[in-house]
Length: 137
Image (tube, rainbow, N blue to C red; front, side, top):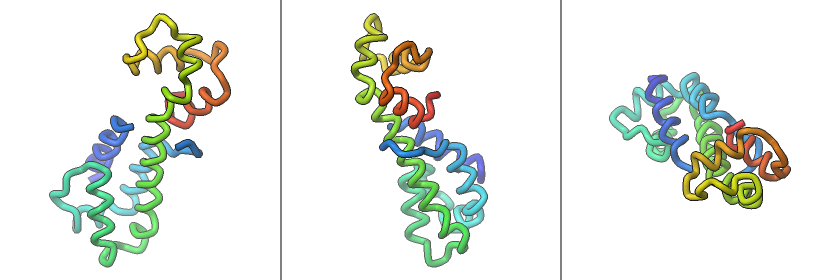
């Protein structure tokens, strides 16, 4: 079941809010510790993407364990914050990309991120914060 939860988070990591974000692994640990039995009992066969899993838990909240009820919202909110932070990095770092990564095709998000992460070499405060919030550094 923990592997299934980690799969959910891997899907979320591929998807694209800045405020202290939690690692996807930490969110998975919360779900695994609090909701593994509830997911197995109530959400068997549900597609393992975060949205559907959250919806399933929400639909079944009347029968969830108290611990799962208490923790699943926090875990999924943390996933969404991290996804949003990752989506925001390129936008928040536009100036830094233009200044530090001029030779890189801006459409190649992976190369742009590599350039930004390579080192702070004059990276702006807001861009650096965005990179950290997204979990890239």
